[in-house]
Length: 191
View 1 (tube, rainbow, N blue to C red):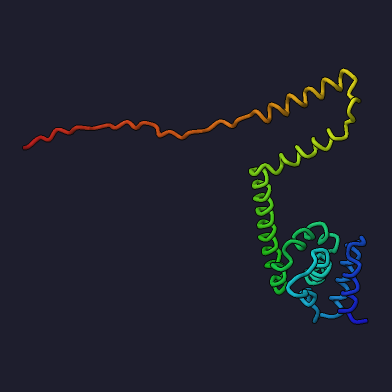
View 2 (view 1 turned 90 degrees about the horizontal axis):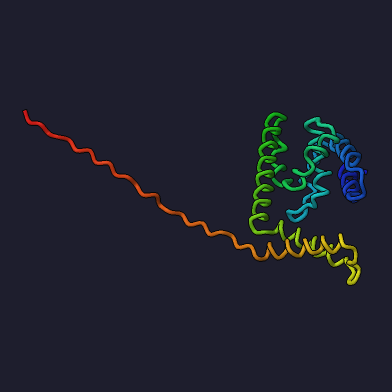
């Protein structure tokens, strides 16, 4: 079988575990045929993220002499999210490639932080907590809350939920502070 066929076969096993061994095999295939590039496996401008990790990870491991374990540990998230932006970087030397990868990692971290902040701002984080609480309460069977401690805790939950519903955020009004005008008079003396 050709290296291209072997790489296609490797990607067909994606999702069945052992990404390091698949990446090691991909590295070997890239070493045996230096004409193959990960971009050869892009179909209609798309690639599954798990396959991208094998194709791009194996190539990065081969070209830049990075262990497959290190690629899986340090780059798999970046590859799965930004493989299309990594593709043009594969012509760079190791130092330039490392710098470009660091920049992409910073971009991905900033995007994740922005998404997290937006979710928090929109209350999506609290929605998850409320849904978890609702799910937990749904598991309590009617008539089974008989112990004094369980009744006390359930009452606490009800009071806390009511306090959350009754809370009204304070309205902050910006005011302009009065300014002090200092007038200095000068005496003009003619000579």
